[in-house]
Amino acid sequence: MLKLVLASRNRKKIRELETLLAEISSYIQVLSLDDIGYTDEIVEDGTTFAENSRIKASVPASLGYIGIADDSGLVVDALNGAPGVYSARYSGEDATDEKNNKKLLAELANVPDERRTARFCTVVTCAFPDGTAWQFDGSVEGTILHEPDGDGGFGYDPLFYYAPFGKTFAALSADEKNSVSHRGKAMRAFAEKMKNYIMEKNNADK
Image 1 (cartoon, one colour):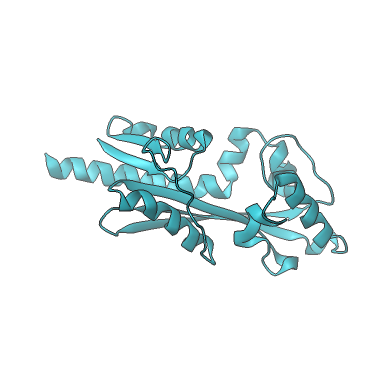
Image 2 (tube, one colour):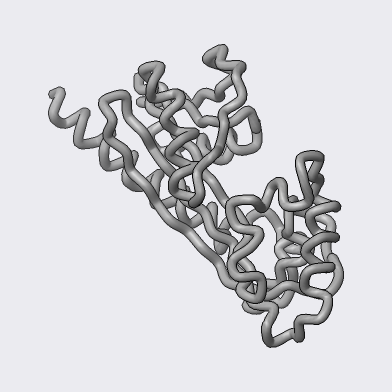
């Protein structure tokens, strides 16, 4: 059985990955960093989503597992791509979602609606012990509102308005969000490749 280690301690992310890989659940086991006893903090010092994603995924890979990680963020056109890779700590080292959202609104205070375009971006990396790595991109376009709306989601979801559904990411159901989100797109692409990899490996072993 292949052990896939998600470079995260977030149980919701673990469950999400298990759901995506349900078809091959008899061949794999999805674990977290806690499950393998890894307690160190991973330093994300890359300058792109791809770099940070690979840094995180390489940690389980260096321990002999197949490592999976994503790095995501909000890219706002009027702010020259900020907050970008600094999305989680946009308002400083003691950043919270609320503080980050307040800072974003302050930065966009005088920006008109037509220039408040933005996108959520993510890169998912699957790293193997032999140094091989797969990467998958995902993005979704939206605009930044002038005030939060919706009680769900996390991060910048209450400010990110998705026109096709006519509401913010924070107002979407989990299924709605997963069907269009940047992370959902990239994770589904990864899941499809992993399924094919498992099937080919099993056929070769017969």
